[in-house]
Length: 288
Image 1 (cartoon, rainbow, N blue to C red):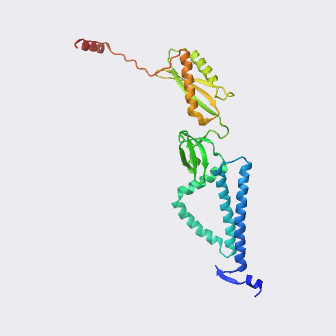
Image 2 (tube, helix red, strand yellow; image 1 turned 90 degrees about the horizontal axis):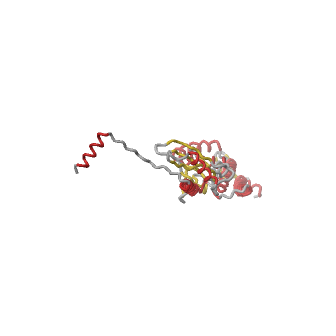
Image 3 (cartoon, rainbow, N blue to C red; image 1 turned 180 degrees about the vertical axis):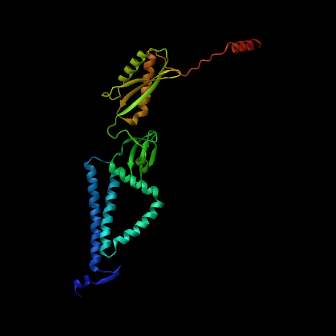
């Protein structure tokens, strides 16, 4: 038997299409080429991120895996069509299966799609400082289903990607690391308010760790029940140190007002009694 005849030997019939040795060899070659192409494309993705200066392993891994899955889907689709399987019927069956899986795994699929959106938009990146649900966190690693972040208390949070996509998230480092730090203080009504403003402004300008290019701002914010309220705000370039900076700012304000002889107000209550009530209390004290 000639070699050409061996290649044309029918092995089996699949979906009405005869499958011979040539078909099988072709499918094997396509699958092998698909695997090779997937590896090359994954290396290209890694190289692309390295050239852009991105070193986060989570983002690189997710991107490489997405390329891998897409490449395999295309290559295997071509291979399957070569042996006579109709892709339209396969897609129809897959659609029904996908709907059933979608209902059972709605949250997982939602987080998966959200992970792809985050990866594509790049609005949130590893090492970014975010405010999520009132908590300051640093993004440590971004996965295809969830993002791992660390709090100021060194706690690791696993945040579903859908939360980052669907809710309002404050990204303190989206454009730059500048962050406005505010501190409030109340002084007694008898204080010289012009002196209060000058003391607060001088104290804020003397802070060494603030961003020098941004001027500090001092505002009188309210007339409280027991105090005149002021707010001091300065700009810092590291939102991750917000707790330490706020503590230092409060201490600076305390000592500046104390050195200037300005009293920081505290809640007070004045009680005024009617004359009859005072007389009754006085008589009750005398009878004892």
